[in-house]
Length: 79
Image 1: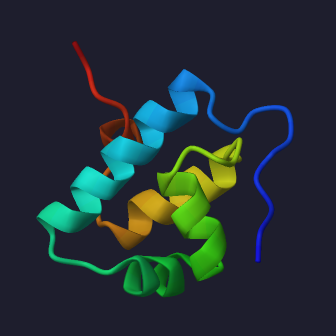
Image 2: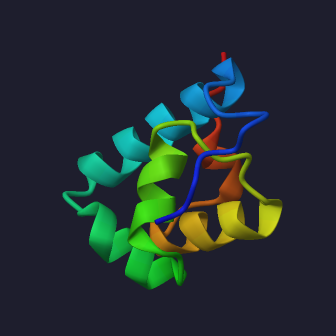
């Protein structure tokens, strides 16, 4: 199981990003497992991303965006 980042877990930016990823995933009716598999990420790590526990690398954000068939910029809400 992927351990949360001791330095960054719970950071408001990571929480917001995780909520957005979960929102996009659920709006497509996809499970955590299916998106994790499609992105080549471990399911427990992906769950931690959605909970704001991991300081996600840009490469992994791209993998998640591709698995959701969206642009990477769409992972971030715009005001």
